[in-house]
Image (cartoon, rainbow, N blue to C red):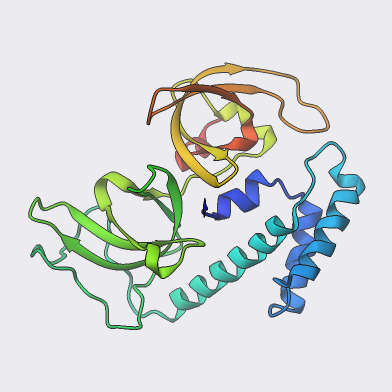
Length: 254
């Protein structure tokens, strides 16, 4: 089974309402050590599903609630580590002045590189071509081709799944989800990520928007349809906004 959880998958695809997020935030502040307990998550999921605010929305799975808590705890830990760090990780997008030998610039055992300021990043896995949120940058190296690579761990992954990723071709600022009211920011030709969830797999794949069918919004939110073409195999699909994540630059559009 190759189910790889991500922050975007839990926070946006599952579609928690603002009230539900606030409820989980309050519980997180009250008892950080118990919120991931299965029984607590099951009770929350049942309460959310039966609430009036979820009318017309998908049911909430207790595993989604648990994953939300786990990812929030991981994010908080990452921020704590960042605040304690005395220096920042070199700018990976430029390669910086890393050692251009065929060796990695190792970090002392048991320590992590500080995260890049307040930005969050994602990387394309060479295993399946999907994009995943980066939890930690561990080390860097230059190959004989002078292509910089970074050793990263994806959010929700185990240490044994750390990957060396090409910095210039497969690492970028994290894609973001849009609110229902922001669907007009998406345009034909945009490069996006589309969420795919199968029986044994959940991942984000890169695609281009090739068609947009504008629809009136209702109580369920955005009902517009987006025709996309996946870059990996040129297959097409029509999806709704909730399955899409866009490049951060799109947020600045009028």
